[in-house]
Length: 155
Image (cartoon, rainbow, N blue to C red):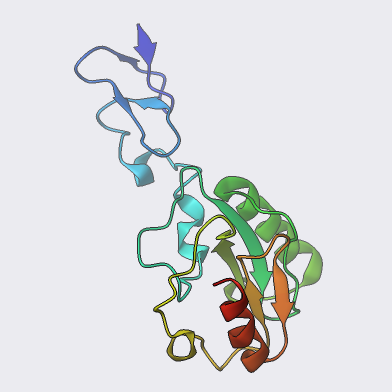
């Protein structure tokens, strides 16, 4: 007999549920993400919505980098969202940067950029720098126009 991963209450069919993100078993009370503090969904609020993503973020197996708009830090290696969030928290503690300035960005290096997209209208102009998540390791640009020109390199 299985137990709920949150409350250890014995669960039997049909009341045994598996979280589609963390893949642990839960009772009917704790299956909701917020009820079992899912390690995959907690950091979702820190994901920066990039111009390129037309679809939902892949929080179950997607890989993320940490980007700090305040000091310019960004991680060179992408990790699963729960580990990237740990690195984000570590950066906050060690750098003194404000939490609201540090984001998670999905590693898009394995995705093809649509040729028909006109990037100029999607790239924000109010940043100090831009990160290309299509490059491995991610590449940093201090100039918006250089970042836009680099986009066409990936096509």
